[in-house]
Image 1 (cartoon, rainbow, N blue to C red):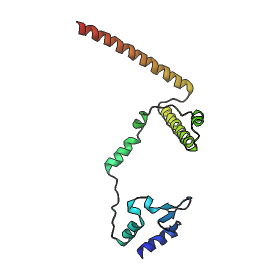
Image 2 (cartoon, helix red, strand yellow):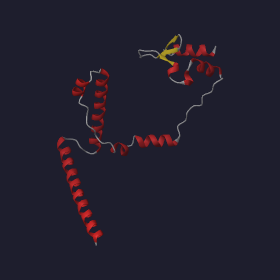
Image 3 (cartoon, rainbow, N blue to C red):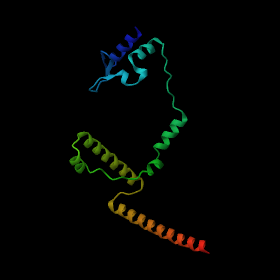
Image 4 (cartoon, rainbow, N blue to C red):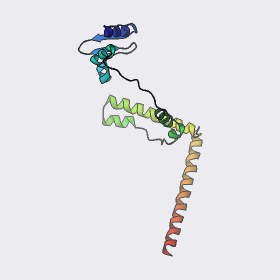
Length: 164
């Protein structure tokens, strides 16, 4: 009886209910029905019936401060600054190798995500134009070369000291 009230409440909320081998719902604005058993063990029709009657109790998940802290670190700008831009996928050449619409979709979305990450990285590092980018590249390569030369000098000095 309580389960039927649940089904009626879902129907009143605008969901289409299909009862066949498996209980399925279609949420307004979506094309397909979703079988409740595909959501998880706690959402099979039998489990829902048990929950409605009170035989099965599912404790609500509460967020701990560790979860919140971990998510804050994941989304902080410090974590994003560790991002290293990668090369984009050349969709045209890869499509010639494998004729797959799924791969084309993957490559397109991958490229869009990489472009977005690169733009965020550039914005966070104060790079707004191509000239600023080339200036930063030149500056970084000069620093790298200077550091490499310094390391070489120090290694030579270390070798001479170790010989003494």
